[in-house]
Picture 1 (cartoon, rainbow, N blue to C red):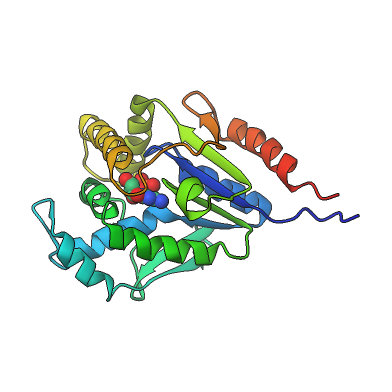
Picture 2 (cartoon, protein in one colour):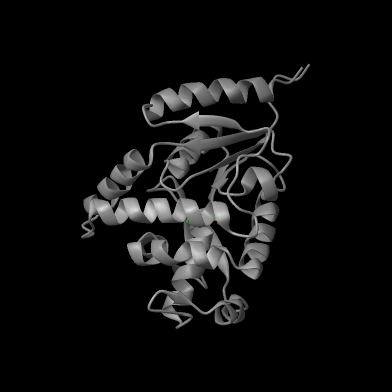
Length: 234
Ligand code: DC
């Protein structure tokens, strides 16, 4: 009989600004797993496209983005201060630049490009090869790891989500309006659910977590029970 629980893959999908990354990061820290924020990867590609002229006045030049992909190298490096990995593009740390409203407004269009998804999905699958990962995104339980042992689909009231993102951005000193954020949250939900490739949807075997009225601690208690059921080794 083994006493050590075996490692699993935990896939967390759901709508924008549900707190997926915060939740995934906390689970990974509790279990000693690797946390991978796949939204950061799509954001990093979007930032690069913005900085290299492939997006002008909010219009995404898909061919140009695909051309740029060849020169984009994404890596993660653990940052002990954050207790999570920072994302780098071609050796530059871009963690602080990828969550602006400008990037948020263009990221859904960039993430709808087939070649972008192929490149990033391949990287994500490689990162989870040895299990022991918590990955959050939109297509983790459906496309990246359809065999993940635990799939969670997170949702929350759009108004609650907009308020959370607003608090986060204003705390950093960004000048944004709550209406603008709520519009962005709703637009991204729509675009992520209606894109042709790997649209956001709940995997059949995912369990739903609506955290509109839940604290992080309540969510942790809930998820640890789910994990325990899936990692018991006899
Ligand atoms: O999780 P986030 O809000 O940082 O993600 C940013 C965008 O990236 C999101 O609007 C859709 C896209 N995305 C995706 O298409 N697939 C993923 N696995 C993760 C994010």
